Length: 182
Image (cartoon, rainbow, N blue to C red; front, side, top):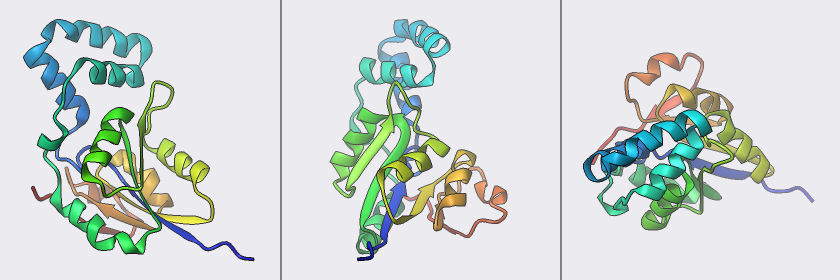
């Protein structure tokens, strides 16, 4: 018996699903409410790396998920196209607890994954995750940056939130633009 091909839609969080970066949200919170923790964040960043710094930011901040600047174009795209996909995943370099909270809040994703202290879920780590967690599948990817190029190169279809003219770097990639709308 032949296994049916799965179609996965993978969606980035920072500057794609939301018009900000969770790192900036966390740093802004520290500056406004706990500025005395910034030197500790810098020390953690340089001694333990980005994943640990992302965890520290999560642990030391309070973020209202409902107040994030969501990209309604991406949300509408997901809702309008959900029947085309067997699985929709929010996959991000942001700390996994933020990612899970956003996915739970929006309730349009089948699963979510983000950075943990052992893996920074960016660039090729995203495609590795997809390969290790899905079988007999193709995927489309919605992203926004140069770090997403290796993912788009392996995807069936690239959907691009065109920040900073990223499309000028997409030489041999078939892509479609999804604009940013509040």
